[in-house]
Length: 201
Length: 201
DNA sequence: CCTACCGATCGGTAGG
DNA sequence: CCTACCGATCGGTAGG
Image (cartoon, rainbow over all chains, first blue to last red; front, side, top):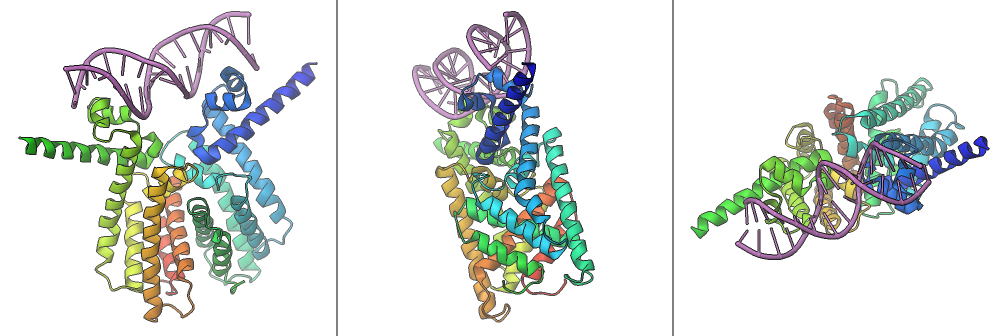
């Protein structure tokens, strides 16, 4: 019976985090309040908080959940492609797909969290910066593979390419969310290919 | 005497908006609370609110102040350059300078406001979208001039160029604010020149 | 511009 | 997982 209780508690926790991620997507991490979560899940505030102890720990759990979303939607499928250019293209395309779809109802969680937290020191900001760093490093490695394979010109600066690719996703996200411009994914698609030295495609 | 009073009131209002813009830069527009402004300016809450009536009108005033900052720091100096490529470069360089400096203590106000507000319908969001639209249109016109002058290839899609340029600034902003990476302005500089078809410069 | 106040909501705790 | 409660803060109003 203790088994069943623990499993139920894990379920509840997962439900809370999932809902919190959706709220954060439209109202920011600061918009995730205990009371709001409690109302929306028809629980008491203390019932919610019980799973995390503090709001900060809840926010860290939300970051983890976003990482999992991203891994599942972007990283895992891209890993099926050959390292280098093909995998880079897959990552970008899946990422653009993710921010255009409704898994994240208000666009790229990372972009929103980064601008929200960049001026607020603390463990949540640190965890976010670390997650984005890990992603950047993985991207940089892929660009390196592409250069080694001759898919990108010798002398390419991998960090510069990663920088520019990130900008494309951010621009697409804004155009999509603020202007509701459905051409944004196509523009992003074209920009990615230009950065990676592929003709109009 | 009514004159002096009115002038003093205008001054106070300007002081409030200026402070609010700084707070918004690090904590978002939602972080601009009446109580916090009052404390920080050593006024009463009602003394602050008196100048705006509601928080929403205060937020709109902050948007206007940010527009003025941007015009003064970016648009006005760029207007001294010839329309087309030279002016585009000036705009981008001044913009990168603005987000790297300390006029906006936590980076690009527009980027922060856009991600904060994109999921929250209302007059503030509308005003923001309109301001960004006006800016995009002005940029698009400059790209058009550059194409006509033969500074950019025939067949260039101006909106695509503007899209990519915006991404560069957003990427630089994130790299600067979240990672404290001082190479970000240089990377942005290089990316802008690549987008505009200029060799490494 | 102020004091004094309103109802609502915040994160969190006590105790069960 | 709950009820009941805490002090702090929110946007805003009344009245001067």
